[in-house]
Image (cartoon, rainbow, N blue to C red):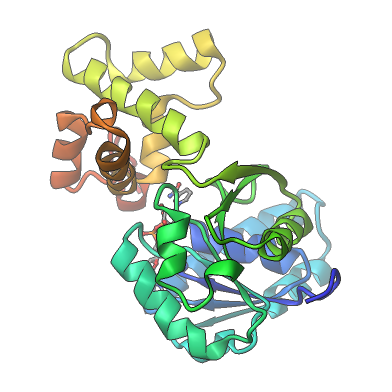
Length: 286
Ligand SMILES: NC(=O)c1ccc[n+]([C@@H]2O[C@H](COP(=O)([O-])OP(=O)(O)OC[C@H]3O[C@@H](n4cnc5c(N)ncnc54)[C@H](O)[C@@H]3O)[C@@H](O)[C@H]2O)c1
C-alpha cells in the first residue's frame, strides 16, 4: 500500500465508538463501510450521525454538498462482504477477546494481503488479539476517544509483531481524520485508560464510603483539577459495563490496585449502564 492509497475503511460495530469512527472516516473522504449485526444499532447510529451532520451544517462547518458527499461515502450492513478489499478495518465491537477474535475470523476472507486490521480496544492486549487474526504483522491498536468527533487523540498501540508499515497506515488514517497521535508500546490500558480507570474507581470508592456526593466529586475534579468532565459524568458517557470490563482486565494483568469498586459492580448489576440506557450514576430522562 502506498502513501496515498488508503481509500476505503471498514468499521466493525456501530455502537458508541464505531459510529463516531465511521463518521470521522467518511468526513475524511474515505469510502466507509460499517458492519453491524444489530439493525436497531444501525438505525440509531444513522439517526445520531444525521444530527451531527445537521449541526455541522447549521454551524457553517460544512456546506450541503459536503454533507451529502459524507452520507454517500457511508454504507451500512449486517454482512461482512461490504468489507471486501478494505485497506483498513477498524474493529469497535464489545470489549471481549472472544467476540473480537470471531470478527477477525469472519472478516479475513474479505481482505487483501496488505489490508491492515486496527482494534479500538481500550485495554486488551494487542499482541494477544493480533495472534487470533490471520495477520499479526498487519495488526495495530487505534484507540479513539469518546465522543470521536470532538476528541483529538488516537493512541496508536504497537503489539509485539506490529510492523512499521501497519503503524504508518494507522497513523495516516488517524491524521486524515484530523486526529493527533501518540505511539504506545503494548501494555495493559495503554497510557490513558490505565490512568483514567484508577481515577474513576477511586471516585466510586469515595462515593461508596460517603466522602462526598457524586455531584460534588465531579465538581471538585472539574473546578479544582481542571478536568473537563467529572469522573461520574465520564463513566456515564463511556458506559459502566465497558468501564468494569477494563478494570477487570487491568486487575487480572496489573494487580490489586485495579480491583473494581463494589459499588461500580452493583451499578452494572442493576443495569445502570450510563447514558446509553438513560441512567448510570445520574438519571437521563428522555
Ligand atoms: N465507550 C467508550 O468510551 C470507548 C472509548 C474507547 C474505546 N472503546 C472500546 O471500543 C470498543 C467498542 O466499545 P463501544 O463503547 O462502542 O461498545 P458498544 O457496546 O456501544 O458497541 C459495540 C457494537 O458492536 C456490535 N457488535 C457486537 N458483536 C458484533 C459483531 N460480531 N460484528 C459487528 N458488530 C458487533 C454491537 O451490536 C454494538 O452495536 C470496545 O473495545 C471498547 O473498549 C470504548
